[in-house]
Image (cartoon, rainbow, N blue to C red; front, side, top):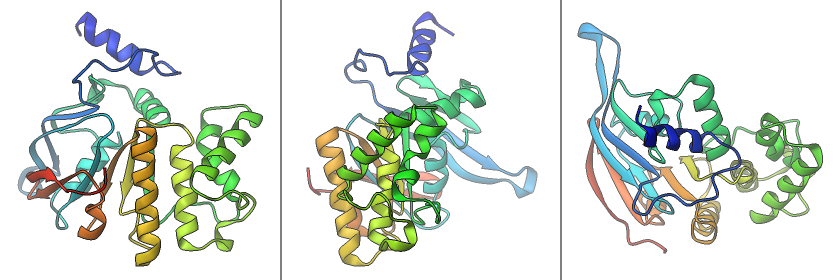
Length: 256
């Protein structure tokens, strides 16, 4: 490991984040010839096949592709939930596959936010307590947790709903709670996996407008998997996967 790489790695794993900005032109995320193979021998399945990809800070990117195209595998690696079989995934210049299990968990806790199609909220727990969960894992003081969770819920338009459980909220409201939980840690990257998949059209557009606002106003990089071209059009850039490779990478012409 070079001195520069060691310095970048130490800075990445220091909390709070380094005061200095990322070097000009450095991507937030980068795949260098990333491949992922599941199984061995004749049963081996190549989910990703030498993918090169660069995503800069502050981008809003939609990822599309048919089932089996490799987009979900790519998202798992980007979310530090899996590692490449070959090639390298760099986050802020650090090769993630060189990090230990605990270091990758720390990266997820402090730099990444996750939003899922199924909301993944605790049913018997209030909206406020659901949003506080990532801060509990970070061992934040109780007063700080409450204040930051309330602020995150206010950001998604749920002031006054803090004490309601998921069963008392609509699907759109539940997804807003999930987004508040994802942003309460002030992540660099928000990974959204089919965030509108369980919502009607009106609520879907509300959620997309919210994601656009977070990207525009707070500079959060958003990477979203979706099957819906109408939702992908909100992104600045759409990446299409096919057969484990990037088939197309272009601008969506959506809101900026």
